[in-house]
Length: 117
Image (cartoon, rainbow, N blue to C red):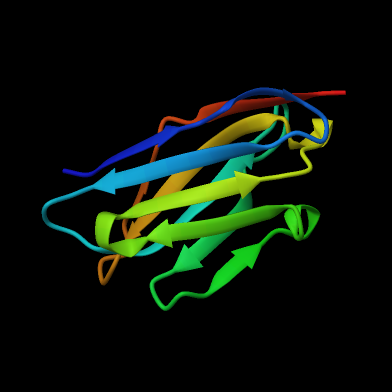
């Protein structure tokens, strides 16, 4: 049984900052990928930032230089520091954890981020 729980969403004005947190709890599995995706109304879910077990990271172009992903692998925790927020960053942000070896993916329930102009 794996539970993925996000926290830290909220409402801010443009230019503000938020920090999202996520923890994947499992007594059985380790995870080789953890990351953040987002879905805005009427749009498909898209990758925001991911981090792999080897320490590498990847970001979508629109957030490079503004968002930073970090993790505590020992605790299966991942964070997303979001600075310089823009109205177009408004979306529900989801955390994903991928099980090492098996490849199965688990998703959190999502946390709303709203940026007003």
